[in-house]
Structure formats: structure tokens, C-alpha cells
Length: 285
Image (tube, rainbow, N blue to C red):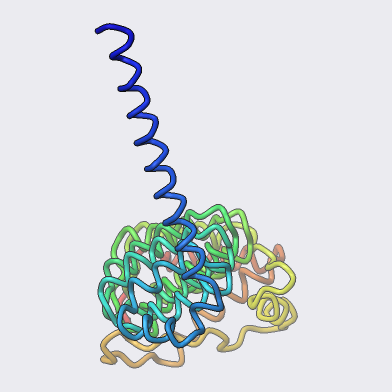
């Protein structure tokens, strides 16, 4: 092709590229404007939230500041739409750890209506590099079983099992709570029962300052004898009633583990050798 004919093609391509870049820049600018507090809290914003709640929240989650993204998550979760679940799952990877942790909490909220998507999102959040996000995920994995009666499959229970060795001790305690909830109800899979027993045969982790588990840890360390400290979660279908002896058994195991003295470790090892947690257990047995 002659040189004089080739130049107009390059000019046309460059013009098209510049037009596309300008269009993208304009769309991004519009997104930031629509996600601003001034617009979202205006009469126009309230009307858009009423008419297009999912799409309107998506705009804020992409372009809004942290406060607007947090508010958008709340509005999105309360729509009750199945389309909200994958959007909230994506928000668990938000650039802000606070917004990500809040998204994890909303997954627990919407779990009854979107259990599969919510559970998958929680399992993925257990591998997040941010401590607060992981702790929230472990907590809600236990809660959606204990409080909402939803089943946790092998993948979710494997995430709880990994949490028992989480680098952060606060996350370990959240995972431990979920593991006990599943074990005491007779729902723990073999992998989780083995991980729970292995954890109880290792030194306990001291919860960090500010952790909700820290007062419990101190109380257990300070007791001179075990008491009924671990209250079992209600059975998923409400069919089983736990006996006081079963409550005392779990309390004693936890008490001996947290005391972490040569005597308590010896008693715990002896007990677990006779009554291993790896054996399948059903409520009432």
C-alpha cells in the first residue's frame, strides 16, 4: 500500500481510539458523580434506589467512597433479590478491609435465601489476607449453621478446619467456636473432627487484645475446676435436647485445654485417647 494511503488509516485509528478513551473517561466521571453523597442522598438518588435498587447500589460499590459503599451494601442486601448475592460476594474483596468485612456479614444475613452463593463467598473470605475479613468469615460460617439452621458442606467445614491453624489467634478462636458448634450437633465431617482433636492436643492460642474471646480465655485460665461453660447451639431441626452431662463434657475438654498445665495436658490426652473426637458422634450419645 502506498505511503500516502496508509497515513489516513492511522489517523482514523488514532481518532477512534481517542474517542473511545474519551467515552470511557466520561462514563467513569459520571459514575463518580452518581456515587457521590450529594447525588445518592438527593431526591433523584432516593428515587433511583427505589426504582433500580440493585443497579443503583452497584454504581456506588464501584465508584463510591467507603461510606457510600457501606451504605450500598446494606441497601443491596435488604432488597431480597437473588441478583444481590454475587454482587455482595464480589464486595468481600473490596479495597477497604472494613467494607469487605461488612460484606461478609451481609452474606450471613442473606444466607437463608441464597445459601449456596453465601456459603461459597464465606469460604473464599476465609482465605483473605486481611485478618478482620477472615475472622468475620469464620464467625458467620458457624452462625449460619447454629442460628439459621443451614447445612455446611465439606468445603465449608474444610475452611473451618484450616481456621483452627490460622496465623491470627483471634481467627483461630472464631474457627474454634464454629468447629465446636458443628461437633456438638453431630454434624462435623471427619476432616473437621480430626483437625479439632489435633488442635486440642496442641498448646492453646492466647486471643489478642480486643478479641471477644479474650475474656473467656482469661476466665477459663482462672478457674480452679471445670464448669458448664460451653452452651450447645440448638439442634438444626430442633429435635435433640442436650443433657447436662454433655454440656459438662465439652466444658471440661475446653477447660483442660485452656489451662495448659502439665497436669491438665496429661488429663486431656488421656481423655481424648479414650474418647477421641474423631469418632462419629450424634447428639444424645
